[in-house]
Image 1 (cartoon, rainbow, N blue to C red):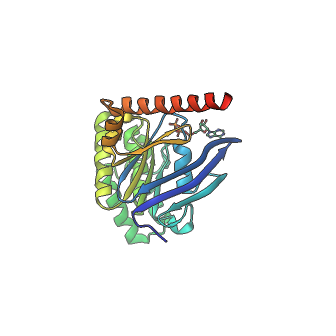
Image 2 (tube, protein in one colour):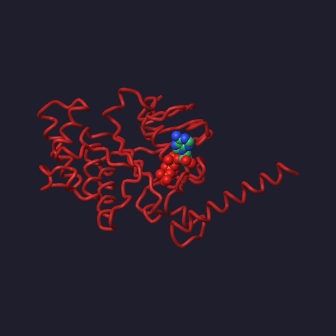
Image 3 (cartoon, helix red, strand yellow):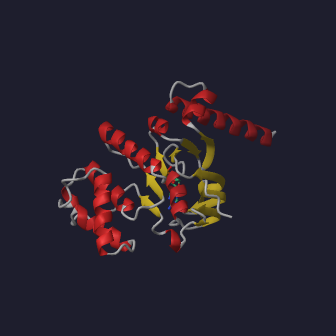
Length: 255
Ligand SMILES: Nc1ncnc2c1ncn2[C@@H]1O[C@H](COP(=O)(O)OP(=O)(O)OP(=O)(O)O)[C@@H](O)[C@H]1O
């Protein structure tokens, strides 16, 4: 049965990369129509989890259901947009050439593609740069072209891997405002970040550490349960707790 309230559900997810188990038996649900932050230190498995959700990760076992279908199903191609950490657009093409290419790749016909490109350009606020070659854009503008490329097919789920890295505070604020707008229109956004102050912009937070879910919470509950003054210190408090619990369990095991 499809649960319309859940955009992504993983059960018993296990991922092995380069012979190492990166995620070992993860259970998690991403509610639909919300901005869900996937937070965690570098190397905690955020990209690996996002890749499993999008269906591009090898050596995945367990169950990952996306919009009611198994992750990576051909039927999800247009319904899921994915923006990787590295800008994945063609530097020798202009903004509209790039977006037109991605629109047609997603199966949109000529006129529909043109309208989709115009909408995507407006959504990321790149009006005036339509005919500029992507190689000549600033870093922030280039990442917005990547985001627009994921938006042209008007996906229901957007999976964004650290979209604000390297952006100045004004651009970061504008991007988060855009994420909120996209969610208000009914889309689900799963956004990874290791900038903890961005946690406050999310409806829900998934905190990952060493491939394990340390917390599945809201920004308000995170602060309340930890008593910390901000998201960064709350996250550190949770990590300390998890490590303390891990050590206690190890101690019991060796006794
Ligand atoms: N091909 C691989 N072979 C071995 N280990 C890998 C491979 N790819 C990733 N890893 C390891 O998997 C772990 C999780 O990596 P992942 O990229 O998912 O983390 P992340 O939380 O997204 O990190 P960051 O915030 O730095 O991007 C890391 O320890 C990484 O070294």
